[in-house]
Length: 223
Image (cartoon, rainbow, N blue to C red; front, side, top):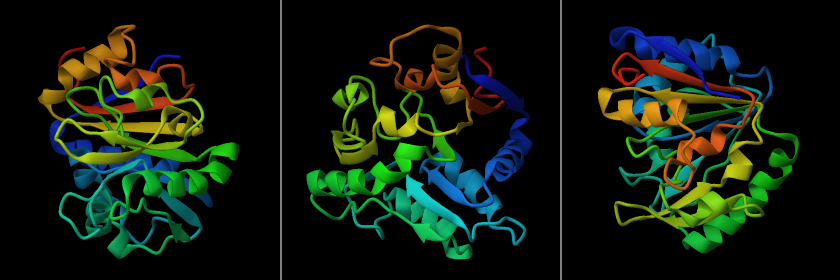
């Protein structure tokens, strides 16, 4: 199935995206969160008292090989913008401060039981190079079939630890938060082409039955 595209004005995009995420949160279950610029705009809007987090277990799509208090940490970003204001049932972070191979194996074990039944919701961003999580163009992790989490080389020279496609597509619902005109070409490639995921990683989601892409007008300008 194709991506379900939803476009909002730039000045109201974050609020609209937060409303959509809020509507997908289960009364109890599992939610995968991500880092990135879109998350930084949307997640602070999900800490209102009326949002129910108490029976939700949180997981992370990817992490850099850094301590959780490092400014580059995805967990750190989510902690600052959201986790410090809510009380979920559980928080399962990727331990970026550990050896990346060991951290990936440990997280694979954490993911296996929930992937078996499927995450309720996965919330992702997308980069200008069409990457999702830490699945970048040309990454061997895009071809993973047995591993749910792997260490990867990132284009910025850092080591990342990422969920693989089998883990991500286990979700019942996938939400892609994408803002800014710098993402417009990647959006066009994702939505209007049949490009291979090796060069356009977001395309690993193309066969999923429920991927909702929440765009602002800048990100949608190439459609």
